[in-house]
Each structure stands twice: as C-alpha cells, then as structure tokens.
Image (cartoon, rainbow, N blue to C red):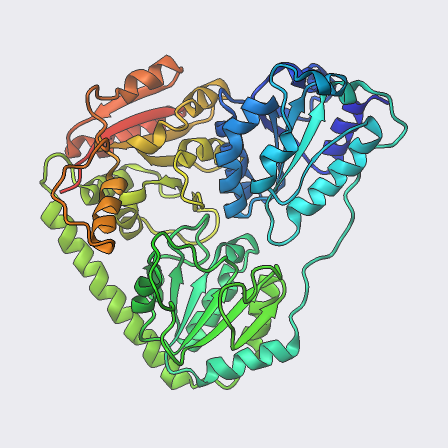
Length: 550
C-alpha cells in the first residue's frame, strides 16, 4: 500500500467526507487519488486562508473534525492567520500541506521551508511525516490531539515522495475513547453552597456550552437561581437564547469595563471559555472585591488559568451543569424569582430603548446600522442562520435578531478579520437544510472576497450582505480609545482608515466570480432585496450603503 492510500483510508476511518483545500503541485498524490475515493468531496478555494477559514466554521457547525490541505511554505503562510482563529475558536481541525521531496532537503528547493516550524505557534501539535510507515500513526494521533479539550488545530506536513512510498503499516483508526468526564461531587457541592448563598449571581457562558449542547440545561439553571447571563466580547456561537430576560449582552474588552458590568454581582460562574480576551490593558480585576469566582471547564489548561477560584470543576461541561442543577436544592426560590423579575424589567427597558433608538435613526441617510438590521431581518427567512462579521454593527445585530441557541449563529474568535465570508462557506457545507445569511463589513470582506467564487463553484445558496460604510470604522473607534487611554491630545484626521478613492464595487466583484449582486442605497429597498436574494436559491451578494462613523 502506498502512503497516499494510507492517507485516504485514515481519513475515511475518522469520518472525513470533505477536504477544504487549494490545489498545488506537491498535493498531486492527493488530487490524483480523489477519483478513487468518491465518498470524499474536495471543496475548492482560491486562497489558503479562505479554505482554512471555511474549515474552522465547518468544524463549529458540523461538530466534526475539519480537514484542510494546503500548499507548501507560501500556502501555509497564507493560512496562518486563519489557523490562529481556529485555535481561538477551539475548532478541531487537521491541517496538512504538501511538502517538497525530502531528498531535496539540502538543496533548498523552490517553495521549500520547515513547514512544521511555521505552523507550530498556532497549533496544538505540528509535525512532518518523514516516511510512509509514519503516515497512519501520525494522522491517527493528529485527530486525537485535535479533539482533546480544549479542541484546536494540528498540522501535518506531507512530503510528496512520502505519499508515494510503499508501507505495510495500515491506516490509522480512531479509538473509542469516552472522554466526557463526570464532575467531582465535592466540587459540585462546594459550588452549589456558594451559589445558594449568593445575593446576585451572574454566569459568563462560553462557547463550550454550545458545543456540548448544554444550552437548555443552562437555561434551567439560570432560572432556578435568578442569574444574569453574559457572553464574552468575541464568541464563536451563542450558548444561551438571546431573547431570554436573563441575557445581558456581551462583556467589555478590558478589565475595568468587565468589572463595571459585573459590579452588582457577588458571585460569577464562568463556564467553558478562555476568560477573558482583552484588547486594552488596564490595571485591576474584572471582579469586585469579595466576589466569589467559580469556573467549569472541560480542559485542565483553562481552569484557574487567569484567576484564583473559590471553586473550580474539571468535567464535561454538560455533565457539570446537570450535576450543579441537581445539587442546587438550597436556593431561596422567592429571592430567585425576584431576581428574575428584575432582570425581565431591565430587559424590557433596554428593548424599549432600542426601539426608540431605531425610530430616531429610521430616516437617516445613508442608512443607519439600526435601520439596516431591522430591514434585513424583515426580508430574511424566519429560520435563517447568521454568519457574522459585522464588528461595529454587532450591537444592532443582537438587538434586532434573536438567536435561540447553538446552530443559529456563528462568528470568529481571535480578532482577525476576514473570517465571515470564508466561514459562511463552511457553515453552508455543514448545514444544507437552513438558509444562510452572511453579514460582513466592507473592509473585512476584502480579506476573503475569493470565497464568492467557491460559493458559485459549489452552488452554495448563501446570501452575502456587505455593509458598506467605506471605512475601517472599528479602527476609528480604536484610535479614539488609544488617544484617550494614552492621553494623546490630538484632533488629527483618521489616517488610512477610509476606503474611498476608489470606491469598491462589490456587485461587480461578485459578478466577476459568478455570483449575482444587488446594490442598495436606500433603506426602503433593503427588505425586498434580501427577500429576492433568498428566493433565488443561488448565492447572491447585496451591497448595502450605510452610514459611517458619526
């Protein structure tokens, strides 16, 4: 058996039915063998970063291990940012790249480099296969490590000659490992005691709750104890229904901001996340003095990583929440009911404020973000799945759309832009029964605009909406924050943050890649354009002109 045969048999053994890739010469053994393995579909991309970004979101949406094939040193380099995002997202992925013939190692061949070294900083494990005898065992180990909590990408370099070598070592097979660990009863009891004594608890719900399918258990727990629920500023999925009265929004990107949001809480339970990813340095703790801090994690590396805990539990997130709910027999039901009523009143007031805000901004021209979101929602199907890279429009998105839980919403972590359009490809490949709406800013979209070609090539009926404000609006907000934080007195303009001169024509770009497009400059036309795009059953891009920074 040749190495390439071991490669494909190992993929099939691990349930891989799709490869996200960008073809290259050193991938010839893989590409030439695809016809022999019709059960594996190759999703073609025009850029390695787009292929990897799509695989990242595919892992999130499918619950499977994504598989990526890239091309030598420059191709892997193009994908490093997207691999980093997958690491932050906790996406189980096996990333491979074709490597030059190992017999040329000392000749410094064209495109040659130490691929394992390039990938190492952004992966859980990075290795090169040196002989065909290693292919099965290394790939088997790669799948195992990618899925160990917290999940993430691994990298395997595949030299072209190794793929053609003969070997008697068979394809790797997945082990039937039962890794959903049960929580320590003593830890659960300690948490239950602290929660029952709390006067005003809060929960920070991380992505692991969504991946574990534990959102309904979380809802039951939240209502029992009368807790507020927050998301981190960046998240891959929603672990709690956003129309629930206990949902409070997203946390700030600095410690004082988080501390202000949690200032009224005497206990904070963090579940299934890195906690916290900050943008700006500021002294101090995100928790007020005397606050009890609890944490539940499925991976030991995250537990008590940043904060000393009053109680921490290492276990499968779903099992731990179920055990905690069962152990909470001493909660003051009357007090919890009062907290729930207060949260509902607060939520009703916020909804009323948003309604007034939308009404105030309704007639602005160019279209306000609030109006744009309202019109997009009105034109979209009720069961639409949102792939989000709105950044500065994210607040209006969450105040307009409701997300019941996992499967309704996908976004990228890590802060790198360009994940939205690429990610929509992965979500569409994973979820073929629900309509997909990708929302992106104009600046972000240009990092992965080639994704439009892949949508057309594979006939993926994604509706892409580009919110065009002709600027990197988030950078303008950030330079304001920089000037304030570092006491920089300035009335200078925002340098190199405007995207005019020339103005980008997204409808023309889409047409050039086989995707129909619609340009909308008036708010009154948004709803009809969105509805028509979905009705077409084809990939479609809508460019919506919106207001810039005011």
